[in-house]
Image (cartoon, rainbow, N blue to C red; front, side, top):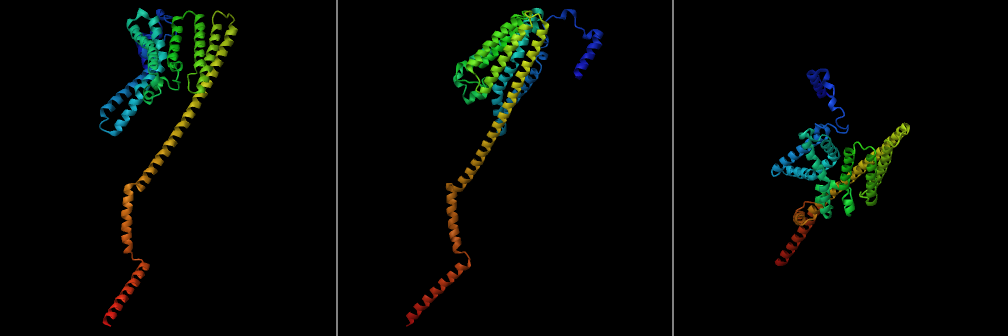
Length: 364
């Protein structure tokens, strides 16, 4: 973008034609997978931006905590942000950045070493944290296994075992096994950099062990995810065998070329199944959200009708109805309808006739 152009112009104005030339001592100094050894933020890509957003959300939640006593709306918003941020959002961020940060930290510490103490110390701190993360995850899952199905625990730590069976210990530790597998892959790439034959061999052994674990324990609640897990691991095992043929074991370049295309097509098949799975899960969650909305709407309507019925048939309403009935009976006596008027006139005439007859009898 514009920033790159400005920086390039500045470098060109400062160094001339030598601005974009790599010094000879820096050529092949580190392996190609050591990305930006001097700039950790640039090496992590989009993750620092996400970290800034998380920090902003934490500050906003802290402000709501101080102001929640002033307004009921602020209190509800604080409870919602606090429940989502601590600690599910933070744990999800760690799970997403784990592979990239672990690879960057270990590779820089291993290859840069004492050449730059500041860079090595910074990456060493992150390296220790990333190695401790799987151990801390295992400790938490084992100690709190009985509390994992609780609602409060799911709201705070559910992202560590979302969609995972927690009835058995073998399935509960799935997140730990997943993180440990990532660490194992990073170690293969970094420590066996020049061992082109041993890398696919150990990778193949690790994949077989992971496939045995997932096929035996079936850690996911959904059968489709268990099938997809097996499909992905079988595909990676097939690609691991293709990696063998890319070493000195196979001398025929045509075979290597054809097997590379076979590996590419296997990746396409795996990508297709995973993409279909994402679309299927999206529509299933959308359908579930619509059902929940319909149930909630029906509940609100039934609750409002129940309130109206209770208001019309409650004790207060009965007393009010009695008062209204008495007032209605009193008002009905004074009602000026024609029939009742005629009845009153007839009764009055009969009474006057009886009074007159009594008076005549008294005279006689």
